[in-house]
Image (cartoon, rainbow, N blue to C red; front, side):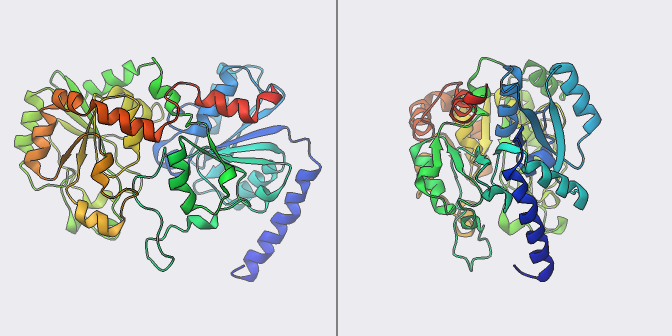
Length: 420
């Protein structure tokens, strides 16, 4: 422990954790991804982009685990009254409870969360949380449902590297199982966590069931099209990742959203004339202060709302414009065009790095490194779709063992079927 206060806190937690030996374990706890819940407002109502929330909805929608209290972790900004009203109207007769754990919560709220942990038989999260000593209790099964299909950029560094993520501090004391999409994904994730091979289960990501399904977000598509004054033929979803080297910059070092010095007015007009709308979903860690906000009508920045998230944006779009984000892998399940905007690839390669070298070997789409190339790629979507079809399939089969709508079912059957 770093100091006496932390030692006292941990000792009190360890005493409380002993309570798990004597409780009835009447709860199932679902914890969404912290950043997504706080920044993108994911919860029981806005759930399609988060693995833990999807599993909770699967149980409720199929009337499973009736003897359990479905407990869902929420943020300090969530409206509990609204969530309770939603739960009561959509799932009458079910015991559903919301507990604040994410965001800026009080000490009292944190200890209330700890108490609930001792009453759980299973905890499902969308990313690993440090919940020791509660996660060490043998009576509770902790499952990380996974945040991404597999890493695209490198998160493994020497411990003296300023970008070192420290993920290897997570081990069997923090979780019992980690859910992956393929054997390759397991091999790439293993080095970043001190977890034995047998703890990784290849069952698939819950959120990809929606991407593969026949359900289509018609309302989202109409809402996006209504944001502009011209007929939209193609919606391009732009998903840039954060840059470590931009975190300390200010607006004085601003750059254009797409990374190039270009005439945005002329570029925007060409997009409009061709019926193209670019919708940018910024990464939660993206330093917005360095991005110029003055954009033409045909380029808009998605603002988080309580109705839909990244999965719906993916499904409502016709193509993906991206750079170094693992969301590219999810998009392969839609079998649509992908354009890679590698305007700063050399700098990014030396800053963060990639899981594959050369990274171009697994990029199933047009790679652009200048404004002219970007414009040409956007005007040639149909050619892109046909040209890279086989490579999209090849990379998809590397990343995903299952290309079906049954990942949530497999996870449920593995852990919770006896409870239904």
